[in-house]
Image (cartoon, rainbow, N blue to C red):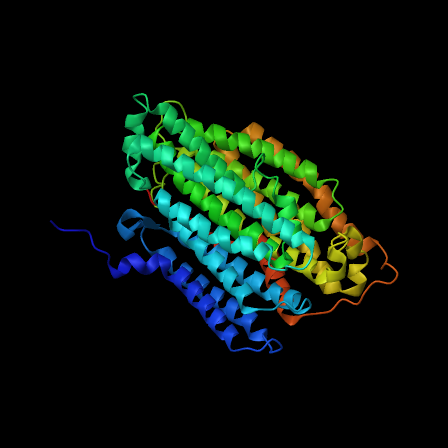
Amino acid sequence: MNLPTLTSADFLPVIPALILVLGACILLISEVFLSAHASRGYQAVLSTVTSVIAGFVSLSLLVEPAREVFLGFGALDPFSSFLTFIVCVALALASLTSAGFLRTRGAERGEFYALMLFAGAGMSLLGLSNELITLFINVEVLSIATYALTSYLRRGTRPSEAGFKYFILGAFSSAVLLYGSALLYGATGTTLLSDMVQPLRNAMGDNRAALVYTGAVLVAAGFAFKVAAVPFHMWTPDVYEGAPTPVTALMSAGVKAAAFVAMVRVFVTVGSGINAKLPFVIFSTLALLTMVVGNLLALPQRNVKRMLAYSSIAHAGYLLLGVAALFVVQPGQEFKLLGATALVGASPEAVARVEALRGILFYLLAYTVTAVGAFGIISMLERREDEEKGTAWDLERFSGLAQRRPGWAFAMAAFMLSLAGIPPTVGFLGKLILFRAAVDVGLVGLTIVAVLSSAAGAYYYLRVVVYMYMRPVPEGAHVLERNWMTELALVVSTVAVVVLGIIPGPVAEWIAQAGTLFSR
């Protein structure tokens, strides 16, 4: 009997994750040989360089044909490769902003950057997971690293509270995800997503239908926690506020991106195996609640860090709108998500679904460069002695910023306009692509709600701009220290937000290729 064997081609999709793990190990080993007062400026640079190398490798994998790897436990496709690129962008920018933040607190250590790289490796592997147990393990890899990062600054009650809440609720969501996966296994007899379609169809014809529906709902609930969808959002503002600001940036961008890609991969299989109506109902309901509640809760916030936390919830709602658009199927049609190379002769609805898939990836990239940049500005304005009092992130911190640091004010204005979806920023283009795809498949009502919610969100984003440009510098304002690494991250983020909003052509070609999702 010929047993299946692994080939060198099976290891291609995990090369970026291996690079990140190698960089993390080098950081940990080098820390052993440093004294307590030794300079650690190289650590942020090493973490950034490692992320950049892994990002370039992931881009090179976009040209690889979609196929199974590791005996079906993983999938090498442009969809997962582009996710890895997004994660590496978030890692590189978060590493740069971490240098000055940690140095002012005397907390710069190799394990911080190592944990970030380990979390990034888990995010990358989560995106290519094509089997439920592998998916769960990679969720735990990235979760454990982010739990530790959340409470990394042990002094004070806020980091400890944030880490404890994140750990308890994260463990609960992982249990829900695992239980849902167990129910799907019980109904189909397999955990491989590629082999699950036909068993799901068979299960719908007998008394296992309830098992399938319950398992699918529980798996969706587990992912909803990771993407901070309402009503699974309760952890977000407290954790985002208590975590170190560069960690908050990584969580809001990288963790969300990985969870969305994994969720799409799982529910493409579920939608193919039963019918697309269940995923559509789940995600359209989550999208409606998340968009409305996220924006409403963000409106009264004066704490900018909490405001961006609620804002991230609202942006998860816009992404969920794109996910819901994937599962709109006309009566009499069978759900099948087409790849980028199979659009000729396809129905307009099928083409719109593929455009929604591409729109999700573009929006994730747009949100990553915007959110990490915005949190980078916050990290430079906050002071350690004000964190316990809760005033470190008050709107007053931004008063007169245009007079004190005009470059920072311009960057923050660009980030706020992008988050609000105002042209000519990349955030506007991301919303345009998603909303257009939703309208093309018939989700007109839900898109109108999204547009109105986005308009309401413009109020609290533009309020920050008003404080920066139209309020005087407060008396006794402290001196704003500059850090070249953080400012480099701001320059890169600002250029990406503006240039990709005006000339998206180079990234559009990658997105067109990345819209290919492996499926049998």
